[in-house]
Length: 328
Image (cartoon, rainbow, N blue to C red; front, side, top):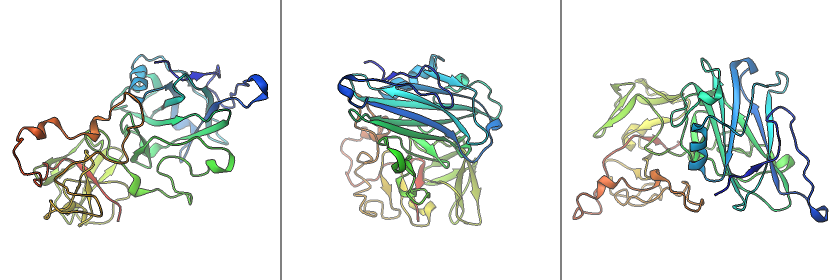
């Protein structure tokens, strides 16, 4: 399967290619516009962009260390990093991964999946609109350092959101990034759990006990995820970003969204929560990927190990897995 074609020869600020099509029709293309937010240009040391069609295949191309484009440019006045024009292959789809070297990292090609340690990663997947010149804004956010999400999601303000989004045109691009609201806020209810759970390197579930920052963090304490690390706040004050959980008891009664999309509601784990269905009957996360032909989202399927007891009662809830609390 061919990758989406790039027609700008340079990934740099202001780079743009002119494409002519027969009959004076508008070309089918998307201009990827990458900018830095809430940071100075000297805080990042290089940015690379890799373009493909299927998300998983695009992640594999990053391992080759030959990105589609790479630059050290960043305009201090506008914080624009660069643009890249992309045209479709026969699939009429594209998957894009942008990585920025941050902190101790100085070469964005060292930013490698799945953890992208020391880097900021942003993703988009979209369909082209025939004979339209559209734009795909992508912001590089320091709050997303060491928060890699997965091949089908992207980080914004420290949380993971589905990376599927439509390209935009002109004024409609304002607030059009994944997880954004038109008023500039974040749609907390749209946050997703990436494959295998939230990307947290020091939190886990021991049965229903939440270990946060490698220590138990029972309610009313809150396990706050900050740039991929978990910190237990025993005071129970609100987390500034995502909150990790094993059951809804860790969320003050709100739903705990598990990796397979199940909403747990403990102690009545078999009941419905907020229209989420029977917690004992895992179903794919409606917000998860499924539009890419041939692509599968491992996180949207129940763990194969859960089928070992074929005769178990369907109302039996699955073992807790590290999840994220729904927004208040």
